[in-house]
Image (cartoon, rainbow, N blue to C red; front, side):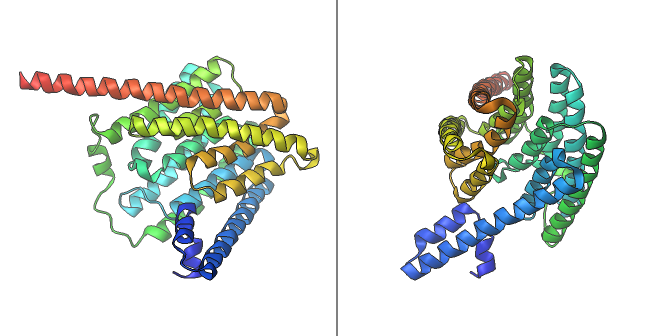
Length: 354
């Protein structure tokens, strides 16, 4: 494996190489490559988001984050169908992400929920056909981030331009990296493979219905940062309830540990560098291969931003409440939904047998 190829590995792949190292020299080399990868990634991400902030305004820095996520994921991930059709779908996803969250924010929580359900249906049915590729962690997360950091007026016009640029960049990189791949399936196959009795379709429906409901309830209860609850629910929803239970435990514990660590740093560090705690969290995520530790360090960035608006106590309370509510509601919703669908399947079998 070349130096460049090793740089392309994810955290789990890099740590696997470290475990397999037979000599101290080999292990030190892999550690060096791993550290360089983290440093290069952090510098690139920081510069990329900074450029977007300069071009489209600080209030649209979140656009840089969303575009960056799409670029980094879809340069390797595919949609499982013909590359040309996938590229057109990606362009459509960008349109949905920039238009629907903004419109939903203009509506009442209930009407907004219905629009969010319709938007997520397109993103998930056509962009997240393989749940184990975790495309939802890019598309749905991007949607929720833009929903939570909505803007209006001139700022929204700049957001449209920024997302249009992001769509061009993402589609270009995606098509260039996947154009030589052969896919046996196309868009029509995705539609035909919809099966309410399959684990995949049930998982997709849970994502589509549950996440908007969580957002709606949080907003009806006047909870600030409702997107946190939606993101927590999205991350916890998996095809199997047993896996969800693991995610829920790790998410709750990870957020509590993250809140404690952030609070300690908040009191130890001077106020002039509070903003850099988020960057420290990003570095921590880069070193984390396990979901629980990722939840810990993801908390840093969210709290660093929220503490400016709500103070430390308010930000910490919101973070814990929103995340616990999101994952627990998602687990209960999916458990009931999967149980109901299994009963419906048994009923249909009985009817056909008779």
